[in-house]
Length: 52
Image (cartoon, rainbow, N blue to C red):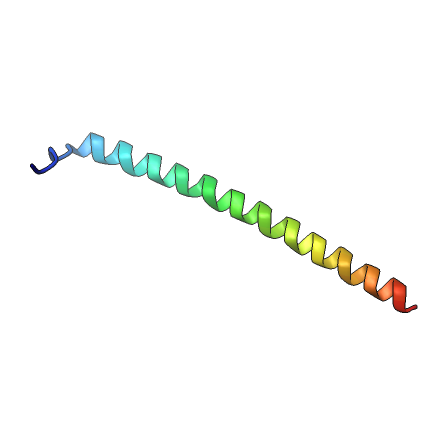
């Protein structure tokens, strides 16, 4: 059984929701990357301080 085709308004609504979900996912990924970069920078600084 094939799914019922969506009308234009339903497609717009579905696409908009998918874009919002994508934006939220991207934001979460960016935050995780920032945290990892901060941790790496801190680790590098600590290594430099230990050498000095």
